Length: 138
Length: 289
Image (tube, rainbow over all chains, first blue to last red; front, side, top):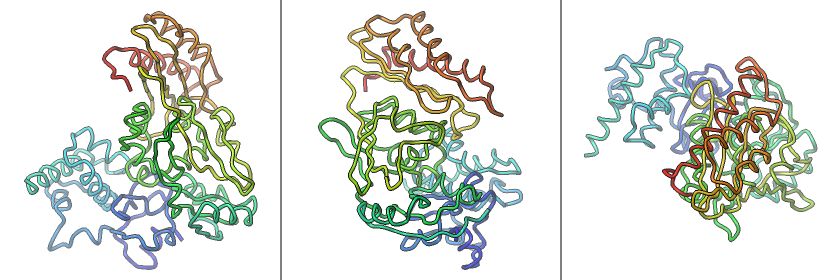
């Protein structure tokens, strides 16, 4: 069983979305042991012993993760289908590239497809979250 | 879009994996990062009887300097290859190429052994192994052997791996001092497989090029172009020499033709990208490796 199906069907945690189911669209991206991965390209059995984070673990409606807050402020979602994958990719990307330029942000998100084509707003949200994260650390 | 049923086996050592592979027979597949294999399973292009998951075999996950070269274990993830200080020190051309390999989440999971065993003709790692004269090491229950890239890559998605064999590591022989490099790729989007890519090294004495290597993907498998390499050896290359070498390279293979690029377009890309890579390698501003 694919890890993406295990999350959605067995655990009934439907925050993780499934689009293409062959690793191209990025919608099912989650974080495993600190690194973003495609949950449709891993079997559930392989995750035995790993620490997984899905969008459910990122923040709550009453207490959004800073990147989620930034997505809300910058209108970085329209239909919302790609959003969980964008968020989990964004969290891993900002972790690895805290001082990312716009070009690096675009490259970092290039594995996630938004069919509403709302990329400008998504890049703006990640850029702003990066700046906020740097300020907090300072 | 769901994988077919298979037996799942998870060895902890290479020796266990080889025993399982021998017992499972020819239908079994090795599962490494799964970034090419799992899509093929999801599409049911493959129906292996067993998957032998090597992700927990720690002894395959290493990068280490030996006397003769840099050894990279088969389970080394693309992200680790991309960010390794040892690789950046000895083979900056490989570091540069890794920036073109897929996307963040794929690089977090994909492995060098998986990419080489899959042998996609448009993948960067087989190209770089071909450029760098990698020693590709395979193991089976009957022992181990070492192949050159020309021996290992046999065609599109075809390698010399035999039943019961696993790719365990590659060793990249150190480059001579004063070796510079160039890497150029044309792809439709960031992270896509290459339509054409060229990787070169040039070993210089002053402005003279003692030796160079030119490797290209765009055809059935990565190739070196010895005739183009010879055209630059032993001279101080001018723009005209570079153009000649690039033209020779563009005529060295029957380039692929598909929806994304015609054969003629690929041929022109080979000429352009080889010339750009050589120009970068021979530029005095490019730091020595």
